[in-house]
Image 1 (cartoon, rainbow, N blue to C red):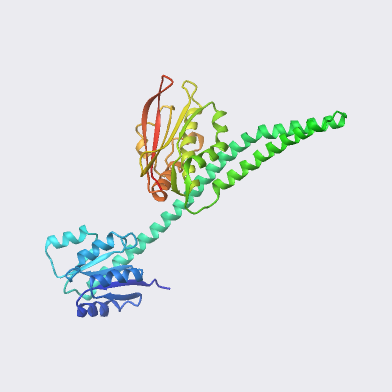
Image 2 (image 1 turned 45 degrees about the horizontal axis):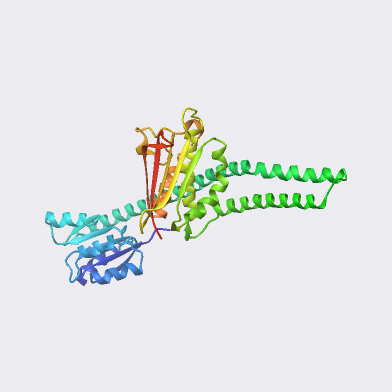
Length: 379
């Protein structure tokens, strides 16, 4: 089945409209709608999804330039290709048409073959562009899922590490109670205390599972306190840093944001894990990661994460947010973590993320490493 295209013709001269309709209706795949003024055209685009607009320039009171400018400033209509219909042939008019975002222009009086050819060309280009954007969107979704799975693996490793102690406590205490029973040495007070210990450790294990499930649960945008979700998530992940002798310094303020809280935490964990991995094999430096989260003013929150791992090579730092770019080829890095982090910050939070190498002091010790800065609008 052939694809149907919606085309809007805008002209205050009904004879011109009828001529264009008579030419375009030769193609049965074109569904043609018209407007006789700029105001009516803007109303039409709110009622229909158009694939192409043929727009006359010389109209009153709103001319074609103003209509084009309005359409290009609206997110819902800015990608509709516009072909200007004009009786003007001067260079200034043509230049202005393209500056405002038109893809082409046709001079009046127009010829049937020219109109059909230009319309066909730009509809094909739009279809190609739409298909490409859909493929990119699908690719980004797949990369986000890959990144989420990688983060899940990191957290599962940390959970396994964190569970060892409470599981060991439960095993030791329950074995002790059993042995006392078998030897006839059991005391009710000690048994109650032992059961309380087992219950407390079991509740800790259960809470860890709940926190892990909450992190990966799909959610709508919510108002959240970043300090609360940071503390909850790091209660799972922090053991991974302690086991690698990394000093984690946290200065976290109460900041309220709107968005997908689990995605923001995913970004923070990505950056922290990268810093930890850069530090883990270096025995000659103090292993430090500093996390600062604060409210800059009434409109902006800032997250800064820096480490003492020696920084990012100047030859690659400009590419650090590119898809599939990684400095961890030997350890199997995917190169999607920082790319998806940038996508989440810019697309989902309308914020900005950047990185630079910095020198800093900690306890009078000179340090050098990478510093990531995230700026976010406050709720």
